[in-house]
Amino acid sequence: MTASNPSMIQRALPTNVITGFLGVGKTSAIQHLLKHKPDDENWAVLINEFGKVGIDRQILAASNQHKRVEIREVAGGCMCCSAGLPMQVALNQLLRRRKLDRLLIEPSGLGHPEEVIASLAGPNYRGLLDIRATLTLVDARHFKDPRYTDHPVFQQQLLVADTLVVNKTDLSDFSDIQQMEKTLLALHLDALPVRYCEKAQIEPQWLIAAAKFDQAKWANPPSVLNLESTDNPLPESGILREEQQLDGWYSCGWRFAEQWHFDEALLLDWCHSQQADRLKAVINTRDGCLVINQIEGQLSTSIRQTVERESRLELLCRQKPDIEALEEVLIACRCNYSSV
Image (tube, rainbow, N blue to C red; front, side, top):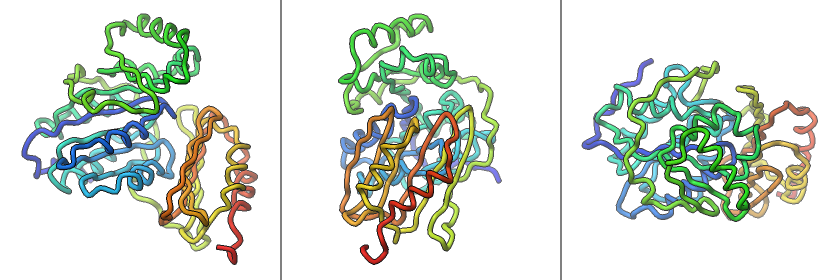
């Protein structure tokens, strides 16, 4: 199977890559941008998630019920695996849907943005995509943590940035900013434009600047090539677990049939008990759909009155936990069928 050039583009499409490490606020930033999108423009979003259970697309679609926004997702690793074919297929599907005014691409927090940009600038999309500023979101507190600063993906995210967006400034202090500046200086990035924001409220005008990244060199591609852009069907049991290990990280996600409803209090207790580095979920409860986001021990939730076609929950950890034991307790958070 090969990806062909889309044929319905009348002009080069302004395209931005919005990258950053796990939990830094990329999806929230895109939510904010979509809320401030001009009403007469058609935008598209292409999301890549590390885990095989895609959740961000559901979150974006539910919070942006707009006919002028198209959202596609590539789940299960880095979207550029296997010579970029998964990304090309998903991107071509987006481009053929309608005439677009802007494209936003969110690589996984563990994905390789350099390769993403190289694919976008390659022959398949030459003259079709107008690559604009790449925004790299960071949390200034991470610059004191070698788990981030020594990670090659974190460093690559800094190196490809046209603008560095420091999010969660309400949670960082002056010493965090000082350490960030030292790190940028060591990487010869002290001239990099830096913007500051809280709650991922980035400004739409930050997207407009031209990209400095004219030609990317491919780094070592990830070894996992079996990416899928479509969901596996749920079994008759109504529950499907999917696991993956890549680049020193482990992900485990669950999908539950629509008729599965969870007790909110029990489920939140379960979430608080986890030692995962990242947890996110879109879960049907008796009161509506519960959206859960947990990063670095901080858990936030919101509720929507409508329910999703299915519930999804995913953990991301540096070490594999006892999945069978976790799943047993998670299933016990399900409401009694007679009470739903």
